[in-house]
Length: 102
Picture 1 (cartoon, rainbow, N blue to C red):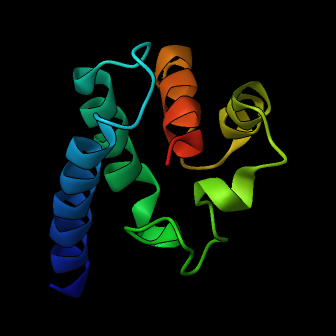
Picture 2: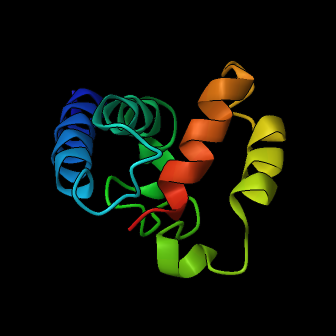
């Protein structure tokens, strides 16, 4: 039950964050893509990294913690990450761009 509640909260937080980010992210990422990336994060990442990306069981992956990484290097890492192995290359790239966004 606790995992289900965590998942629901993570999804809600991701949707709220995506709507707030739509005004902050360059025009190259559409609101629909932001929503898609936030849903990927909520489904595949939030259980370890926390709904706010600040870390839980996994490390902090907020934009400020990722300043030394390009979107391309993040995408490369994510390709081999245990929970991202089922994602398409387009989803991995979108998630990497989203992780770099504030």
